[in-house]
Image (spheres, helix red, strand yellow):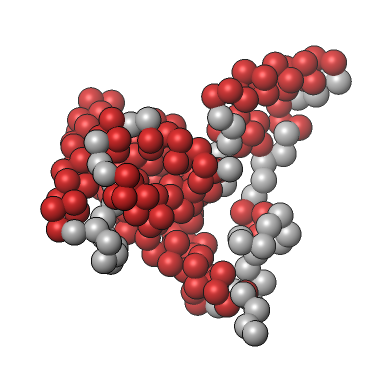
Length: 211
C-alpha cells in the first residue's frame, strides 16, 4: 500500500511527470523503498500511539480516523495516552517478517542505529518527512543500464531544485545555527536510508528459501 501511495504521489508531481515513462519506472523501482523506509523510521519516533496512527494514514482516511478516535475517547472514557505507542522492538518481535530480526548480528545492530538516526532527523517536523520523500524519489545514485547519462542529469537537476527548496524552508523556519544542523541531518539521511535498504534487502534474500 505504501509503495502504491508513493507511486501515485510521484506521478502527480510535475517534475516527475516531465520525465519519460521509462525513467519514471526506473526511479520508482530503485527509490520507492527509500520512501517507505523513511516513513517507517519516523513512525517509531512519534511521541504517542495516537500520533503513530494519524501519521500512518492517507488524507482520505485521516478525517474518518480522527472522528472515530474522538468518539471512542468520549464514549469509553478513554484517554489519549491509552493508545499505546508501538516501540520498534515490539514491532520486530512479530508484527511482520520484513522487520523481524531474531539475531542481533553486527548488520542488524547497524540497521537499528540507522533507523533511529533517520527517525530522529525528521520526525519532529512532518514537513521535513514530506519534502525528503520527494528528494528520495529523484535519487540517481544507483546502477541501471536502462537509464543514460542525459536522463540521469535531468533527474539530478530535479532533485537539486528540491534540495534548494528544502534548504530555504529550513533556514526560514529555524535559527541559523539550528537550521544548519537540521539541514545536515536531513542530507545525511540520504546515505543512511540507502544503507538501511541495502541491509533490509540482504535480510530478505537470506530469508528466501533456496530450491
